[in-house]
Length: 373
Ligand code: ADP
Image (cartoon, rainbow, N blue to C red; front, side, top):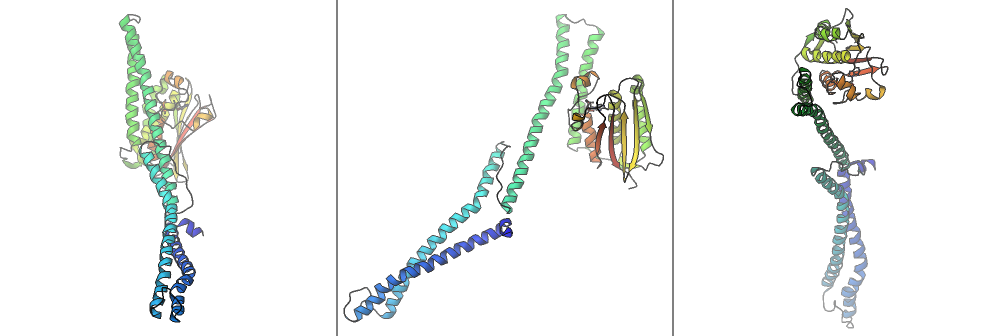
């Protein structure tokens, strides 16, 4: 029974068998019902006629002719009835089998017209039911992509509008003479224009990594060298905020098999965030550890921390814990961590964050394969 439910071929075979059986049964029944009357008309009358008493159809014919006439008459009714029965059964069964294909066809037409919420009901477990399940999955995926696209356009518009509105406001103030044309005003305008240009750069980089439009130059890279480059690059920012930036690396770390520039980009991004979201006088530590055949690199800070409800969304583009605070702190638009996630995943690794909560620091960690695993 299960085999029949799961196989379209078995269903078609059974449908054909049912059509044949219906034909045969109706044929037998009609013969059974029509033979006595036909016999009486042809053979019976001949017998009576032979005795010189009857006027039936069989009168005056030979036995063979009457037998043949009886056979043809009965068979004529039987074949007509069985063909009609077979056609009826065939029509009903094929409608039943083809109905889900019609439903699928109508649903795909709906999707083609942009109604991504359309789904089909899945009955049974045969090939058509599997097709319906796959169709529903495809529709759900399309719906998600469409909603992400809308969200992206909304987010980008919002992000562009904020600095543009600022610049426009400053310019109008200058033109109307409400704002003084001092270096301070021009610096504010420059800062907003700078934010705009960083946003455009970030968006360009995001679209490149999301479309995987870059190649990785994988080589064996020593971890201390990576960390040193990062520390050197960010030392001025750390010093400016009186933050102690240090590294804590065990001596026997195996090298990594990675694209050096890309992983440096990830490390710099995470460390720059750590410095940015840590108040003056805090600590930022870059450490690495061997865990099984992986290396875990962590950036730990004593900064503002992350409330637990935000942890799961941090690597989603444009996500910021506190938009206004991030802006005041000179933060970006919430794209950096998304780019970092894409780059780490392109190396086959994972990235995650742990935090004890607000004001209690955060630790960002990413895992990579070591060259000697
Ligand atoms: P942004 O450019 O806004 O910093 P990111 O994608 O790098 O964008 O970070 C997204 C958000 O994650 C930030 O806006 C901030 O709210 C939070 N965040 C990132 N790093 C830290 C950190 N070390 N401590 C606390 N919050 C952080």
